[in-house]
Amino acid sequence: MTHIHVVTRDNRHLYGNELQQYFRLRHEIFVEERGWKDLYRPDGLEIDRYDNEHAVYLLAIDRERVVGGQRLYPTLLPHMISDVFAHMARRGIPKAADVFEWTRYFVVRERRTGRTDCRLLAAIQEFCLDEGITELTAVVEMWWLPRWQQAGFKVRPLGLPTMVEGQPCVAAAIRVSQESLDHIRKLAGLRGASLVRSGRLLPILDRVPHVAA
Ligand code: A1S
Image 1: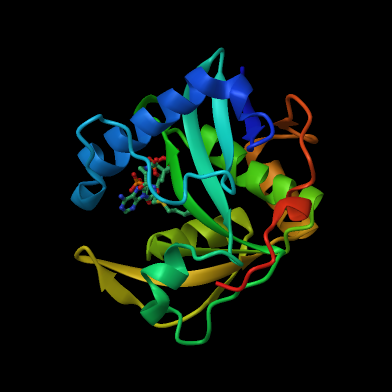
Image 2: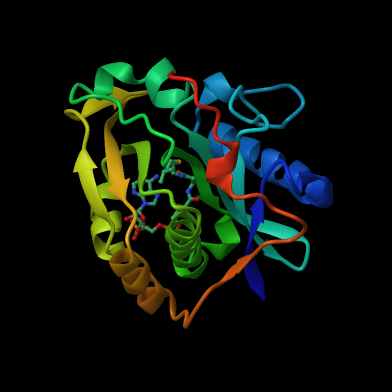
């Protein structure tokens, strides 16, 4: 059975093996499968400057095997949109304690039937609602827009579509809401809360450094 585990700086010591798998999978999927060659590392682990103590991971784990994942990062710190994609957010980059950037979303190939995907989408809405995060920001390829619409996510573009690595992409903000969670839970066939929180986790917003990016 697959569960979505919350991994933060408070409990990452419990997930050493799973985090190693997760970074290796990110390399396999983003560098080798998706061809994002700038992320290549000779050790085969895709780790970037945002994989630090402020990152939060929601990992889909089936009996100690990581089968999917996603990352959240505070927008009050320099983050991918402010550092690299600021030109794609001409309407302004949302930066607030309760706004997080959403990156590195994947499901392993043999689980791409939509089910793990729906669970990860439900998990992100559930986690953000629980923690008081009101909005997510992301840079995505355009094919995410109909996916989000189908998932019941409320999305507003932050700028015009722009080519990134030969693909039309857009920066967007997604509103976190109970309505979206209910919608995606229904699609995923989930009745209630599905997140696993191991160890002693402090509320995420208590951890957000109040430094403007
Ligand atoms: C940043 C993301 C942020 C949210 C943080 O009938 P199909 O196969 O065409 O249906 C597909 C397509 O409609 C669409 N789709 C998926 N990958 C696509 C691509 N590279 N280009 C264009 N369209 C694409 O989604 C439908 C279902 O996809 P799927 O792979 O068969 O199944 P599933 O279970 O819904 O998994 C979707 C994801 C995106 C999770 C999976 O394909 C994956 O992990 N891909 C590699 C990682 C990735 O590209 N992540 C997004 C960027 S991170």
